Image (cartoon, rainbow, N blue to C red; front, side, top):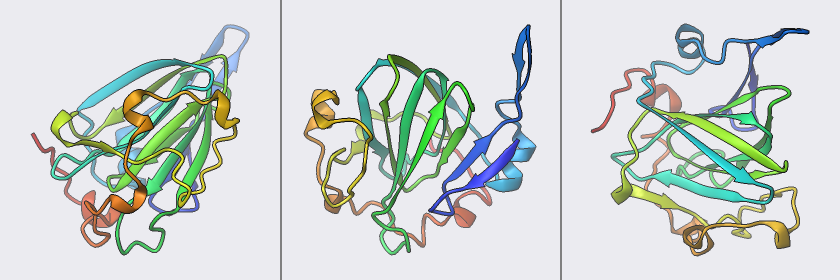
Length: 199
């Protein structure tokens, strides 16, 4: 497996080595020691899976403190454009975003740390999406920002008229309204040096 840096250093792309022949393929999708070498200490406690059709956009989501979540996301089937937005006030990359194509061909995974909003849009006929979280889903602290906020200028690679979002995601607040994360508190080296799960 190799690690590919993104435009925001805290967001990483993990690309596995795939061994394949006429029988099929094999690869390591996660290895604790390798992950901790590049990110830090982590304990994933929940894994989620969703199936979506072409044009479905889910996001941009995050959980507010003290129930913040990191995510390691990947596609099991199909193709999506995955997006992570830096929400950390004072960050050199505040308001900037990373996009990454995740698909079944390259089998890449995107590491989305705490302090980032996350979302994806389906580019293929359908897609099965899965992600590990280092904290449990907590409805009372579930939050988001508007997927097409003009201040973010995200290029979703699909015409707006084919994008479909949930009723909740259609009325998420503006990016400028989020003030739950301070860069000094959500620096990667601080978060993952001694990570503990919030219950």
